[in-house]
Image 1 (cartoon, rainbow, N blue to C red):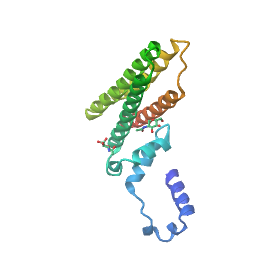
Image 2: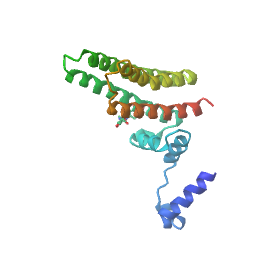
Image 3: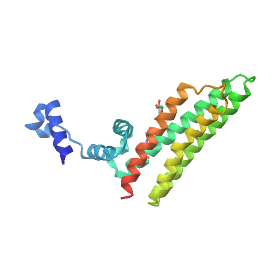
Image 4: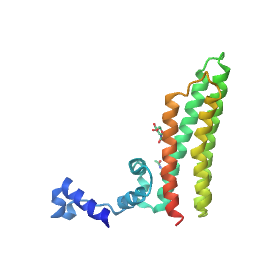
Length: 184
Ligand SMILES: *[C@@H]1O[C@H](CO)[C@@H](O)[C@H](O)[C@H]1NC(C)=O
Ligand SMILES: *[C@@H]1O[C@H](CO)[C@@H](O)[C@H](O)[C@H]1NC(C)=O
């Protein structure tokens, strides 16, 4: 209720005519579901912007939104796995330690994508506990990669990888917030 009043006040500020010519403003009821759903998550802006890029998001329910966000996470993990594989190819042959760690990291991000894929199956069968567990797993795989770098004191953890780690974890956090509410 509070948020509806807030939204109204905000709209009145941004679009003063809203108060008088309500029909002029297209208030999409389904955008509201996105906003309500994202409010239950840790990264509201990431949630809304990720969902908005998918045209399906305005024509679906809460579970559908979770599935879209899982898809974003799968694409993200897969992209990082590919990025690491390409780094692997460009690493000098005389740097076997770096190659070993990059290969391990590429695998971990691939597993993260698989774990997210598993959570899709879980949602289909309304096994929310398993879905939650699989997304937690996906969120944990980047740690295994970071730890692989830590095992070799000579290897610095690349800042690009730290950025990607945060990116995937934030997406997973958003998905977890959504699943939390689905399971209620
Ligand atoms: C939108 O989400 C649906 C459901 O998860 C997915 O199948 C589709 O590939 C997504 N579209 C884009 C453009 O990402
Ligand atoms: C994945 O995360 C990285 C790091 O935040 C970001 O730069 C990239 O745009 C994301 N990719 C997708 C497909 O969301």
